[in-house]
Length: 495
Image 1 (tube, rainbow, N blue to C red):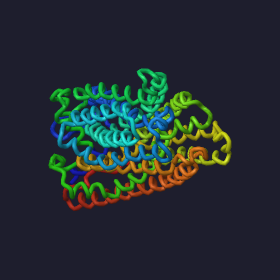
Image 2: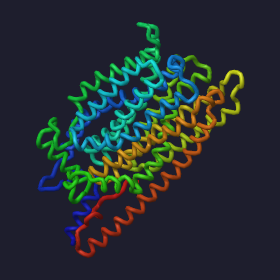
Image 3: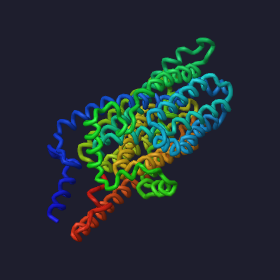
């Protein structure tokens, strides 16, 4: 009994100089640090670049909206919103099926293939002559981009301990802000090509961004890492150390069973668990933040008095400020090993932004359509910050608290698929007929949802806390009865 208690205490200690791994070997911390440096240099830069490209292609419709596409394709009333909607519907439908493909194919080949295909379709979008053609292209791009986010999150999580994954995924997520900022600059630069070869600015934006995606995807076939057990860039001793430390971190009995095929019953059970559903509510709110900024920020900035080119450039400071806050929150969350307080704080910042936008609407001029420029611009900063800091911490929080590969890949697929429903809301509340009025319905809906997000986060944290108490109680009972720990072994939810 004393030996069992001693072993239990060792598994709960994380800040120690020498780590006892399963088996007869003790590994010095220096070897782990060396391994982590190698993983960081091999994995993160590749995914960071791919994510930047993904976010540029995802958000480019917002950039081309003010570069003449509405006129050239004879788009009226809700047509732009429909183009947003079909993209997001495709993401929702194909996110989970695409995510599960990493269990059937080599992850690197799958990620590179879908990226290559959406790059080709993005390029083709620049040549479309009808609104129907635009809808078809956006639907195909959405269906292909659907699996990118969860596949990358899943693959990164397979190489790091839970607390290590948090800081790395948060830093990786800043690619969305870099992509947004660079996308605005790229749109500004490419718009200068308007008239070249007879093509309008918006066509060059799609064409050149598609070409870049195709080139990057071609290299991705060779540089995206496989699952740890197939990692050829690691030496045998490094691979053994990696797998051992991950098993130790998860404290899972029967982890090898995760290699069995995933059944439909298991998929439904995981997808409908309270952890996934409540996290989904929060992520839904966060996606309303992000999609509002990416899809309508250039339009909002143009309507406060800037030209199209000036509006594109003024999106850059918004994204870069959000990036700084994203990194700051990531390190604070990592340092304190807490998630919920920082999600709540991010939601509060975003809520202030929504309110700033909403309260500027009574001052809209009926003749010019311009609102209070400074207040509207400040509101965009705060909304962008709120979405940027919450999103990566939420993904990490769920991944931390799911046990095993099956739970992780299904939960992340469901989370990111369902979260795109937020884009559906955005497309239906930021409507063209209200543009001159300052989008009052859109900002009112955003304000209300931000409050819902705070309450849902508090509820989720309470649920995790209660489950931890249950684990502790069952663990104590098992030890006192001389049994094995089973599913109540030293696994605790991150709060």
